[in-house]
Length: 226
Length: 226
Image (cartoon, rainbow over all chains, first blue to last red; front, side):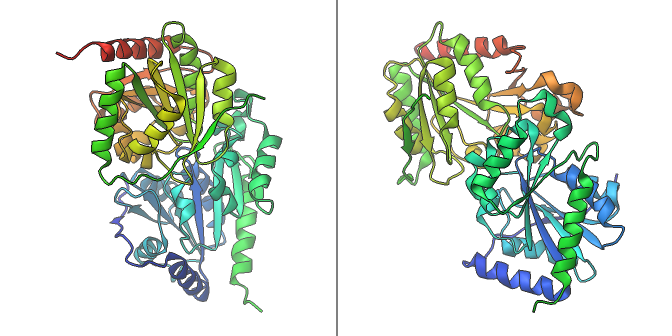
């Protein structure tokens, strides 16, 4: 079995998380590293989606993955085994989110100087992770078909604070009463400017659209700001 | 469209939630009312399961349902329309859980003097709700097949603190790599004494087992303690 490092994160000592997040984001930008924060409810397919997109992205980019969980290291091991990219497991010590300082501890462990792109897989939760800016350049929320098309109505902040919504498990749409158009409307109600990409991480359907979206985002993030 | 009352819960002023929860539980027991706290991740099927079991339980018991969410009243309206039992919507004001004091505010609104059984549908979340004793007599966690059999490894406390685990959406097992025996082992690893009942709330498969479990629990809860 693959061994991955597991880091127990320490509680942040900073009271101003937004300021910390801005500083971290600027530091990453200086180094040319893009950080993407991936959020969803438990079991929506964060890890499977990451494995699927990382296996494409690694062809042209140097990628790392940080897996945050309350306990266990199943995700980091899976990512390491199935993609071969740098991967660390972060334990939150019972907490349901990561803030900028915790994210930075993970980044220090993974070592981002030689990485173009780092994914942070946040704790599976639609409430707390949305309340803390991690310092990421892009927030991506995954909503899976079995959860239902009404989730954006119930969990406002996570949809309001994200740039990209991936609707996963569309291969099983036929077995659930999930209305894709209604779901798009519910997302737009919370966040009219979010990009919405329906995929199946399991079958690979439309995963390329996510890969291209991220590749182009990383590219634009490397370009000097005017 | 059915109108249901929506209550915006106030933050608890009590520092000792465990004491508040014990007091609430004792008060409910005196009145002969059983409170069941239902927890799961978003979209695992809490509302569908409740509708399905309430429609059976209401034949012999006086039942009420409190639906807690951060926003929207879709669940309380659905429960009221499809079961006809007393139902209120609780808004947590952004918080990811309910404590005993918040639960009591909901119970005051629903009026439990004439109810044998009240369900509290907690916020969809596998972390925060497990950290607060609501005053319930029974904690029920729903895990749905599409989420995966590894969830008990990742979210220890919610499995450690529950009495009954309902594994929902077993009708779609064929479309997901979900191993029921592995899932049972993972639940037992966290909580060897939890009862595990696999069901499909949508097709009705094995829902009767949950109905009988709850009916017998309510009965035993009404019997005077020796």
